[in-house]
Image 1 (spheres, rainbow, N blue to C red):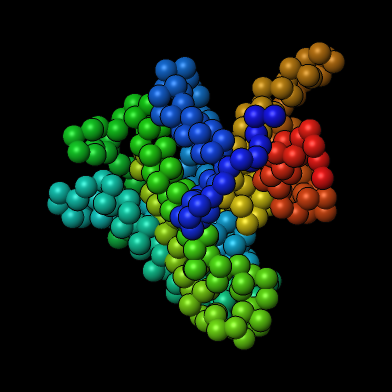
Image 2 (image 1 turned 90 degrees about the vertical axis):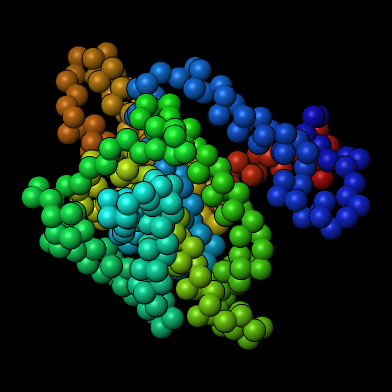
Amino acid sequence: MFYRENGQFKTSYNADQQVFAIPQDRWAILALVLFAFVGVPMLVDEYMFRAILVPFLILSLAALGVNILVGYCGQITLGAGASMAVGAYAAYNFLIRVDGMPALAAILLGGVMAAAVGIVFGAPSLRVRGLYLAVATLAAQFFWDWAFLRIKWFTNNSSSGSVSVADINLLGWTISSPVDKYLFCLGILVAFSLMAKNLVRGNMGRQWMAIRDMDVAATVIGIRPIYAKLTAFAVSSFYLGVAGALWGMVHLGSWEPAAFSIDRSLQLLFMVIIGGMGAISGSFFGAAFIVILPIFLNQMLPLVGSLFGLEVSVALVSHVEFIIFGSLIVFFLIVEPHGIARLWATGREKLRLWPFPH
């Protein structure tokens, strides 16, 4: 009864075009963001920050980038991990090679470099689609895996092939503790989420969705495929590059090329499929599922095994995790292709109509 639109009239175009048209949604999102900034740091311990919250925030940002390309523009990619790697190594080199480079500027420049690389490797989308485009982006993944492993300049001539970054600073704020890392990543995620929401609602987002639904018809009505597809690759790679820089410089602190392998690309694609393609909220649902499920299985399977007198090995937990991931992907593709986000939207619609459905 409290989630209804009766009597909420809009008297201007600006009111009708708000990001959250229903006041209850606006207040709920504002309360959630406020709780994330103020309440969570006071209630959560260090393990939760390191193992769950910080990875969730960064992977949500990366899933946003993949969702823009796959969900909104309909261009399949298997090279998301490569874009994250480009962003991480570009930010690292900006930070160590440019004197006085602010950490936030290095992270954003890493995203810009990833966007430039994304445009180059997104060019095949102008001629190929589907499986052929997936293979083209997979080639980008293998190329950058090889480049960061073999070309020593990217790692500042590190003999081990790994790089490390000391605690980064932002306007005198040393981001070293888990709470600092959480707040820093949360601020970036909120800003980028709002930007993505406005992008997909605007002219550019409508062009992406027209290309996704039927590119021939979109071309007939005046949409330029070259512009729509390359901007989708650029924006998606920018988000992934910033996420990669945060993953390496804030979450890991020290990393090697294996941190952004093909497994990372598949993981991000799974997030979008399970969370919901073509929905901003789907990126958050998918990231939460992917981050929490392994921890849940690691805790629950040994407990269930002990109840039945069985020994549960680490390998068994890993295999069960893969089985569940594969089963859920098949389930969502068959039963609900739009993922958890669609289930959430359906529940909200029923709540808005209750108790007088029509």
